[in-house]
Amino acid sequence: MVLAGGAGRRMGGADKTLLAFRGEALIARVLRTIGPQVTAAAISANGDPARYAGFGLPVLADRAFAGAGPLAGVLAGLAWADGAGAEALLSVPGDVPFLPGDLVARLLPGPSWAEGGGRVHPLIALWPVAAEERLRAHLVAGGSRAVRVFGEALGMRVVAFAGESFANLNTPGEWAAAEAGGRV
Image (tube, rainbow, N blue to C red; front, side, top):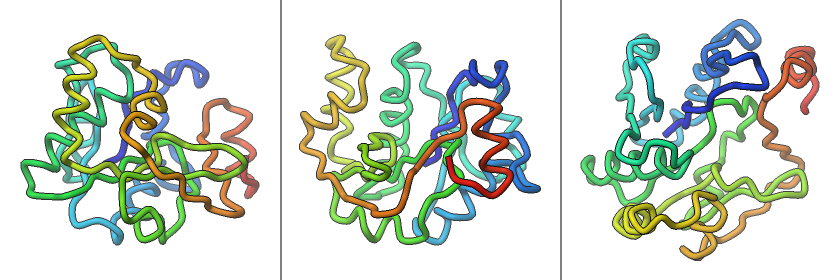
């Protein structure tokens, strides 16, 4: 599942995932990378789902926990994956253009998340679908909205990706550097 619900404040409020990156929408690049690694994909985003209609994927809104940030998106993804009979859910931010082609294989078995560039990336993660009710209870109880806090409580395993930065494109400067061939 691609998390595409960010407000894009540092990019002037733009929907970053739909901006052109090296000739295609950034989300198209992310989906092209993860597509061969998963049996099904979805997009987690609020607002008008029609803006993603061209991708032919389910668009999962996280309205049940408005304002809960990415954890609400993860919960929507877990519910979708559970309904599809999956055992795990891959989550990736929609603004990370340089995901490895072996991401899922290396994150198995979950629960796990990626570490690259000297830090953990809590949203580049493999979540067990069995965690759905635990996450829902966490959000209902008003638990921390920090993905890392919930993931640590879940016992996420850290998987090191040497040489990977997993940098997301948040500012026009980062975007320009990545477009020019550099990794931010």
